Amino acid sequence: MNIAIIDSGNVGGALAQQWIKAGYNVLIGAQFPLSEKNISLATKIGEDRFTVIENAVKQCEVVLIATPPTAIFEVIEQLGDVSGKVIIDATNAVMKSPEPYKTVYHALADKTNAEIVKCFNTTGFENMLDPIYNGEGIDMFMAGDSEKAKEIAKKLALDCGFGSCIDFGKSDKVELLEKFALSWINLAIMQGYGRDLAFKIIRR
Image 1: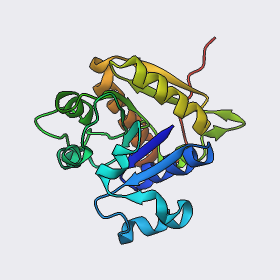
Image 2 (image 1 turned 45 degrees about the horizontal axis):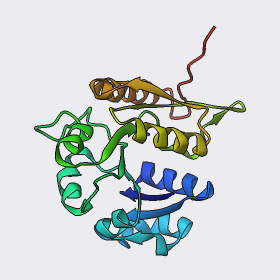
Image 3 (image 1 turned 60 degrees about the vertical axis):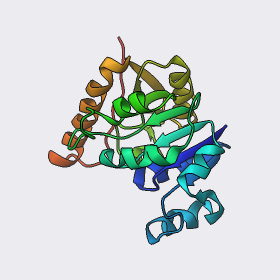
């Protein structure tokens, strides 16, 4: 599987490292591929993985978007033809939404013909780099209307080391999933519990 990651920040960088380790071909799509911002990640995964957004997307079947939500309109213009491709929305618009849309997921659903899923947005990048707690993988969560996109997101989550990828529901649950992400942010940062905490569903 070929994966294009749009943005090389903490989340995109963590997932790039995990998926490369799992054997996937990963390209980083960036407006300025070898800017100062990208140098740190390039030293870990190789400069040859960086290219402009359109080239990265053209070569890949799966696209992960981890940009700030308000950048999505500029990103969409650079994606090119994404018909039939899977787009994973890993953003959170809980602080600032990409108006007039409530979330990046909704903007993508309206402006592209891709298969879209919300995933990899509910925990910190440290947990993406190392999702194992006491010998057990923590949970990842997803939402959206595309079963094809969900199957791929689930596989990619498991290949990162997550214990499971739990389906939150269809597109009407995307906003709820973002609020769930805000719950992690609240505990880890606002309430001062620290970023080394994670969610794991347990059953009796």
